[in-house]
Image: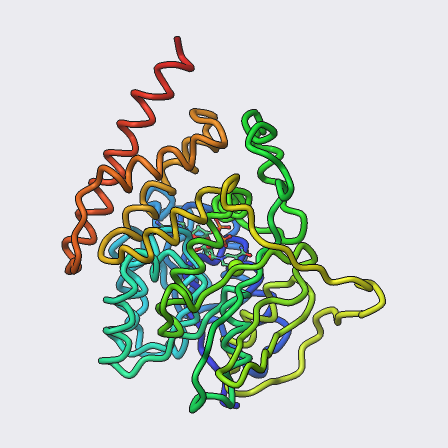
Length: 393
Ligand code: NAD
Ligand code: MG
């Protein structure tokens, strides 16, 4: 395998820092070309000094001077601002763009990377949820491969390797069930953000950890799977698997099922997205069967975790419906993390937005952007009128 020059977009986050561990574990195969962070200047500087990239971008312009001063003596180019985040992916020397920004904010840089024919390692699932048709069409037009980093989708992708001619009957996405598996709605009414942020198996950024607790993460992943693997909604099933060892499964038309297994460790799917179609040695911990004598599976509870049902509804509706639930979810999760709304109200905000926001069957790019902005405004209104005024009275 030739050395891969990698741009890590969202380098200071959970995926970004693990990607840097992947790179450090195999310096003969990977080189950091670009690092992009939102506002954590100290960590960005530290990472840049350790990896000596060609360039870095800090989205928060107020941190530009600090980063520039630290990296200038090392001949590392420094840029700032959201336009620079979008443009940096055009750099000639980049082979792979790891899209690891969280949320809708990751869309523009990924689209631009595709336009410039960069291979995409996609962690930012929201990109496909918001505008899956545009993103996949653009990738096809530009002959660009999008390799999944999300562990479930990497599992499906690994099961499909060598099976490209064969049809999929269905896929099973596994879900850990999150910290509230087995709880009733009454149990969930008063759960705190600290409880919601305690994921049993994975250590991740705050937004995706809350999404895992509400099962919206699985809902977003169902939509992500549709676009990555060209599936119909009825071909995508979710099963709860609390041990998070079977990362997902594919059932082929002859009834055979292939699964991909391993420890819950994002370094492996990140690594595979960088090395596909090859497998090269890694020093990461290995699975031991005797530590997991039982692997169990159960149905998801859609009555308690209504977000998963809402995501399926949006998927079936199509058009901008997934974009609407994504924007509503980002606003609601933010409000929950800021103690403005309660846990069960996250799903209420999303449900109301899906019912009220203007539906567009075949949106273009501008309409997706408008739909995202309008839904955010609507969600803000709902949160202020329905919940915030009540809690502040
Ligand atoms: P995180 O919050 O830990 O990190 C987000 C990163 O994006 C940070 O480096 C931050 O600086 C950067 N960022 C945020 N907004 C930005 C902006 N506007 N401009 C530039 N940079 C910006 O999030 P995470 O947990 O690493 O998740 C990243 C993405 O990967 C999400 O879409 C998530 O759903 C997906 N994902 C994460 C995991 C995981 O284990 N963490 C697993 C599967 C998928
Ligand atoms: Mg996942």
